[in-house]
Image (cartoon, rainbow, N blue to C red; front, side, top):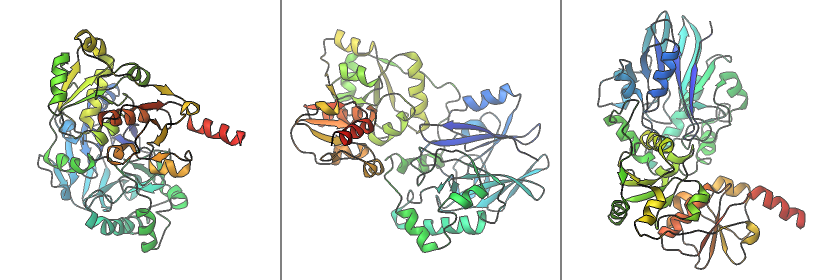
Length: 447
């Protein structure tokens, strides 16, 4: 028989979750994200009731949604090794749970985390689907360095054995539904596809068809880049039990200009979520530019401490709801509010704005070019003479004095980089909003 699987993709965090109906009275959620609204709405449209939520591991990149769904009568299943501090059904490797003649079997697949389980759905002895969590991904595996540097090599070797001894013996035509995927910093680099089959991975995944354990270790550990700082805190928060908000969290409170000034003066951060051009035309001194887009939460989590009070400059109510949802999805809950009246409210209160020049590569002149892309992007191609500093570590990288021009691939990260430098006291910093590939191609044509 075939199995119906309804995927939900979080493009910003690079993850997938799933609803899986296993008969009339059993619908399971696999690795749900925090806000239950879209799962409940999808289930209601199909006249389903979500009866179970399965977590594959303690997540480091997002707040798990199993506890939220349990508030709507779903039974929560999680690895016993997670040691969750709230009500759940703990699963050990090999445990089986029956649903209308189908079985969900917990498979021990440590590596990404020590407690990791994958879930194999069977019809009798016939495997129907594998929900692999952070073990086997499309073209890759999940990273093994998020727990403790002293455990990284051990976890990498456990990942090798999970693949070769537990997953590799399964049939080629088995559908594989990973949690982590393209865009997730939890992965060791994946393709743009979200689902796969075991046969396709045997053929194309270098980690699955690498049979030498030492070579596997070198391959995986050599592929790992940096990751956001908040990853180091979410496992503990997911274990303790995230606060319940339901499908409708409270709105952002309106803050006067003086309240925002006071927050910034006492250790809070002002985050401007408007489009790059709007931010450059006039923004609050010391504000951090993180445009509201799919990757908003990732960069917020990279640049702002999880417990720091945050005030937002936004474009209005529709965007406010998205701001709240993305913040809560990664455990950011100290949301002080939003600037009432936006930047005009700031000006009306008698305060000055800061403006940032937007230039092209051809207008750089005597500026030192600073490239804030990830190291993997820099290694692929970059401008000769540019200084490289990943956006997430820009505030800790020494950069020469004098005028600067900051660039990325499209402009959003560059605007964030300019705002980080402005917060550090740099005043002559321009935003290079230009297409890098087009400019490099033109340069080669001129040479």
